[in-house]
Each structure stands twice: as structure tokens, then as C-alpha cells.
Length: 78
Image (cartoon, rainbow, N blue to C red; front, side):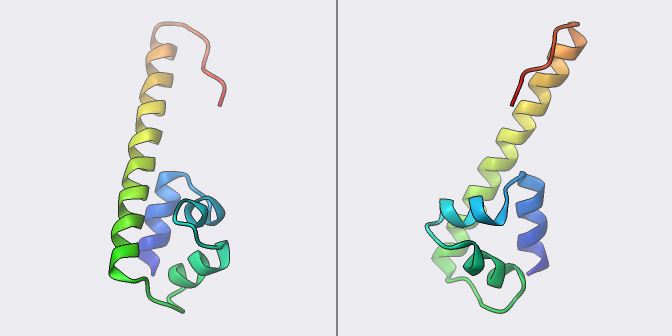
């Protein structure tokens, strides 16, 4: 599923972290991304919620870093 991979990458999560958040092994997540297996509808909904939350967090962190830079302050460490 190319869409799943794009969403995960945009959220900044690895396959291992995304799988762990859904209590699944990295290999299972990988089979979903590669289209070798299909996610159950409920798991898909959970994955979309996870990836959306991770994207929002990443956007908030990027905004905070930009605000610090605009104020001439040092960047936060990850």
C-alpha cells in the first residue's frame, strides 16, 4: 500500500515504531505497506489515527523550531 508508506514517512515514524504503536511486529507493518497482506478495517482506522497524530506532532515541532529561529533563539534538541 503505497499510501500507507507515504503517510508513515510523512509522519516521521519508522516501520518499527508504527508497528509497535499498534502492537504488531515491524514485519507485519512491512507486509501491509508492500501490499502482501491487508489490514483489518479496525486496524486501518487505528493506523490512520496514529499517523495523523504523529503528523500533527511533527508539524507542531517544526513550527516551534521556526518560531525559535525567528526569535533568534537556539533550536531545541530532539
